[in-house]
Length: 90
Image (cartoon, rainbow, N blue to C red; front, side, top):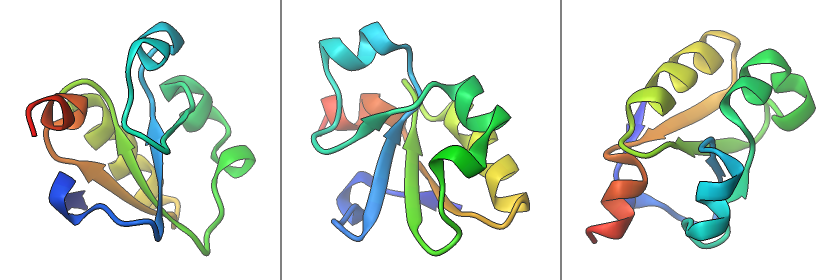
């Protein structure tokens, strides 16, 4: 499931799966940093089945794969189309 930057709202938790240093350099406001592998290996530690999440990486390719996997596990997760790059170019 995909979502556009213009459709983000405060109802969804935004997760940046990029490396910590990239997150510290710049990120979408109010997003949290959870590394891709941490999220994939232990989603129950970070996610709740009753909440909605938006996941992003640099360009939306890795996050799309992560979202597809988490959706198969029953989580309500959306991929930010264009990733962080879409935020930079808004």
